[in-house]
Length: 483
Image 1 (spheres, helix red, strand yellow):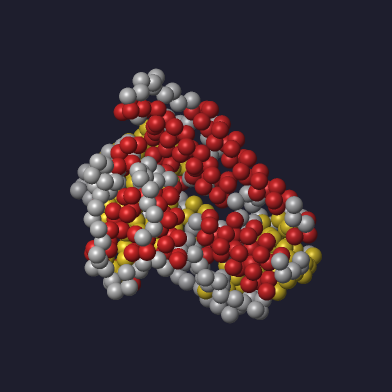
Image 2 (cartoon, helix red, strand yellow):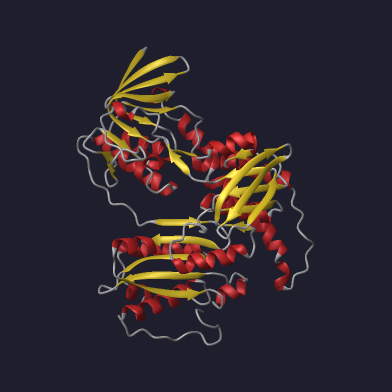
């Protein structure tokens, strides 16, 4: 057994770990990154990028299928499932290659392959292909990521026919049918994309919800919108999986006692992810953890209690998004590198996007967060059904809800299901971060005709509800409400 002495040890080489490495290296060259799996981030390998490649193919197929509404006569799109997956895998490998090339440029002394466990707060025992290495570190950054969760009963009943999103991107050809269980971001995006590419799909959920929206009005609308296109079973109080020779049968019973059974080639479990902290030996590190096993830490510093241990990315179980993981890695790596001079770093305004169609976004505080905090707030609303530019594009589906603080008139956040949500979400998150008031936002320029005019309509409604007035109610008479 060899011993390695370093200032900073980072467990995990994903987005958070790589960013932590760059930040810590600004302070010391005595550091090591420990990784027991393949290099390449979750985003590049099995998350953001391959899923958007599949979504892009689905959007192209859907655009061809809907061309008739614009007076275009085009042949029906023929989906070549093998070609679709070839592009997905090829481009995925290209993105992963960028990540692995970056790691290859690190000094060899900064890379250690193996599985790490704490012996104490400053010591890690790393099981490597060649034996065991003891790492003595002044500080440790936990950036071990997360993994999909699959109920053991499903695995027992249907074995290899139960897959997770990681497996989808290894397909060489699109299957004929897939049951998708889980109506969160991953389940919704993949179910709709596969459906639009000609795969028979049914999306199953248990709580009646779809996507991350917390505003009751938008949840109701989202259920209507997606049910119009996707076969949905959203309120399953009982779900049973049974494997058979050709695939898997899914038996469900809804809240009204109505039973439904359907067979598929595959069952895609999109039932959530679990942080990878349960096999780190944290009990030996002397840190306090919450009931799910995540160390208690300060998200402004990434420090676990008063210890020399820091945590970042999905392992922290906070906001499992790439930009958040990068921010957390930067904070954790910087503070681990400059220890004991730990500094507070302000966090960015929350922003989350679902690349469904219509898209979903939450910027700033959500409706549920404001209600739970007891914040006195008002709501402004716009429907995109008659919004000018949205109708021009044939994307006039959905609504936006914006929230503002009574008294100060400060803009607090928004939720949306509708066109261009990924872009509107950025504008609104920036306004939250700057601390804009609703009136300051209304004083900003709005071009015509653009989807952003719908945002202006919602902000005008919000200003009236806040009684911050006077706010003009004029609109483009030629374009309809929310122009």
